[in-house]
Image (cartoon, rainbow, N blue to C red):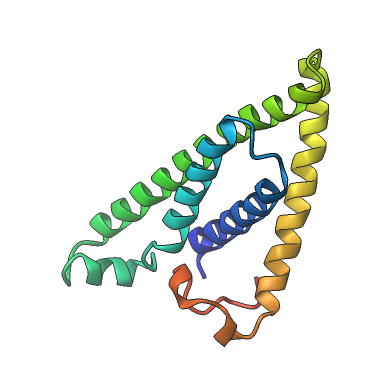
Length: 155
């Protein structure tokens, strides 16, 4: 796996953990639906992407295309993924504020930022544990459709 694959796999794990968290949080907050939709879109972008090695990109472009074109296509895809991840983070922030203010309408931004920092640390730790769990699965148990081919156990 190259660096791009590793970053995508990390984001996929974070997105899956966010999905699990959203499953237990209240569904009646209006911003949840849009967050869920955008998070699912991010997961599709990460899982349905082609193998982004230069060789695979060249084949996709119809054979002996230039390395520069393949690299630009890879960079464009990376930019789209990062923009979608940013959109998810913004929507998550809105949802969490709505969630916290539902019980405490006088919640200050400072209090929210302190709580959010703890939430993000917990989510990050959960994503790391989730990734470790996935990497321990036998190769046949890892879905091929996730676009990472064989997951390198050394990462």
